[in-house]
Length: 474
Image 1 (cartoon, rainbow, N blue to C red):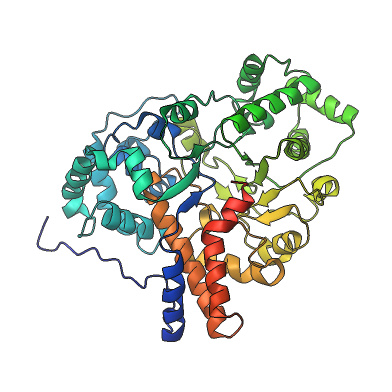
Image 2: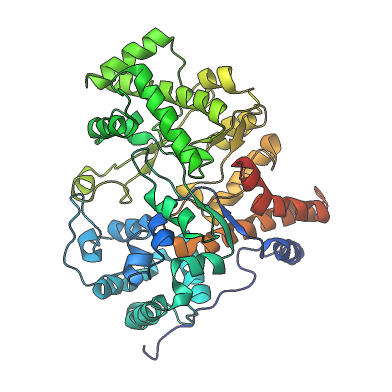
């Protein structure tokens, strides 16, 4: 460290209103929720961490490599992902010392000023590791050594951190091809931490997924069904969904390019499937097949009770060169304009009023909050709104979500917060940000005499704890 080292300080009123009246109300509301257990019903942490409970390898492997928010920003400023040791599409890596990768990160940390990543990471550094100076080029090695030493102690083992973070439940997300061995190991270990899975069938539903042919073949091998025939394919989904449910799953997750649904006659659906399996589907037919499969998944949800989540409106892997070198989920996903009113109607015509069906909708298109999503969720019993997602889980995005959905959707047609992250150590910070923003929003309503403070406190607790449990049938 140097003489120019700057202190790291978390202000207790961060994200609260600057108006003193509203700020005092927000403080009181936050005091009601700050100690509540964390419900993390949708995310992408690695279940192997909790199954094996092995020490995290080093700061780079834990805090940098899983977090596409971080290396997306670095890449935008000319940092080659090879210099960070990001795994390539073929499974190889550039021979990079993890400490050197961390130095690259530290040298560019100023890029994150004002972003949600800066907020989350500051809380991780300060609260989880007890660091009191800011990360920069001059403190890079100090950070690395301090964090690395902590990670070798029992207090920083995955299960110990899970308990320290007051996590009541965390859900991971797996493909139908996953054997869920890590979840089985967690169950068999007798550890009381609740780690469940969610069914994400995209690789065997999306004909345009690069792994679709091989994934479909493996799907058949796992289930013993003839998945190249329509009815066998549907039976295979039912079988794997039942297996996931037996391993704790309460939800499915679908990451489609659009929200389009379809309800084709059975014979027409079968003909479309035959075209897909033959590898002859056009782009329009691939989209129609995905649309039909959302309705098929909804029908299965009515039968097995799994809550359905739809995450549409993202152009995945937009950077072709980066995708070819490093594969999926490397920060090159871009939001798309998304339509819901017409797109969801075929599915809602069948299941929108069904008491056993539940669909949680997300969006990357904020223009749909007030125009489409809140009115839909404010009417259909089956629909709930997921929180501000991905590009919009910053404080500003969370505020816009509440502001634009409250009038026609209310608070109770939303599902509270989910962190949707691979970055395990940031989970408490992400939930704290959401709780602070909700308390600030509620404080404004109280100060304007639109809601009583005791009612606002009840809403704050519901948003932080009860609504996610209820929405995800936990």
